[in-house]
Figure 1 (tube, rainbow, N blue to C red):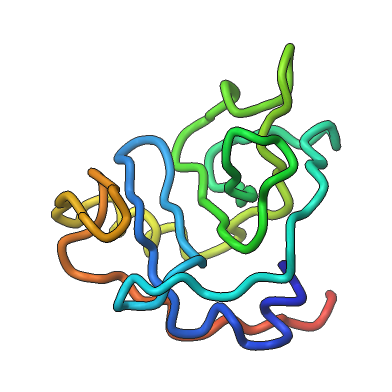
Figure 2: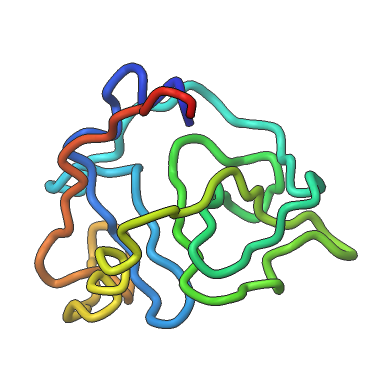
Length: 138
């Protein structure tokens, strides 16, 4: 994740999937729904002890547990069903520490089917991530 931030690769991407009361997902596409390049897959670290609780940030992936690349999502509920159990879970790597109102507003947008992605829960008007900045450690 930090590599994408450092390279400013998240700037101008969209949040392409909003499932009310569940998640807000983005980081993989630009506003024209072109897939952004990635640096390869990331080993699944869902066993780190962190849980997919409200306002945490996790890596999105396909069915293969080690298929995460650049997409991430905000948990908009306590989604413990995404934690590891009998199967691999979804790796939590951060949390929202302020600005929760912004992602809450994302949950209220009008949704539509996006044929370019085959996504039934896509914002009708793009939600664009203008820039991501790494703040110094406190």
